[in-house]
Image (cartoon, rainbow, N blue to C red; front, side):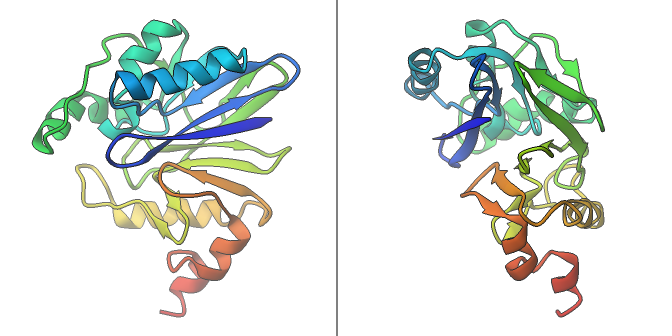
Length: 217
């Protein structure tokens, strides 16, 4: 699989494009494009690489991950995949963004409900859904075991984890999700929802929220 990360909006959210080389079938993970210029960057990359968008995947429903969802769904009328427990986050995203002085165009289309263990195929590639609540109730990661790739959304960051002080966040639940991710192969490359890629090996060594490091605190 090929991966391209574009950084969008004032919160520097990571929008990941993942595609299968032979077929050019592509998924767009978390289209957080804040304005027309940012969306044009996403659209131009898809066009230049001759990618065929087959799904839009959401790791969660917070506003910074869906700023460009309405525009992306218009441009590519494909399924929009979301865990049903995060519909609340999508519904409250306008109010949340407005409180921060940010504008968001609401997405009013349907969702493809996804959950633990679902396999999302595109071309010859596939991503498996891991339900990892804590930051939100419906947070998910997308995992490819063959190539050891993890798209972790706001569950896991380089050296940190997602905050739990937003509505419906829960710290103990998040730690349980981190414990689960810590069991994946250490060579797994992690592409988070903010910041830069890391590996689970590095997180075992340095992330204070990983189980072995919590025990040392």
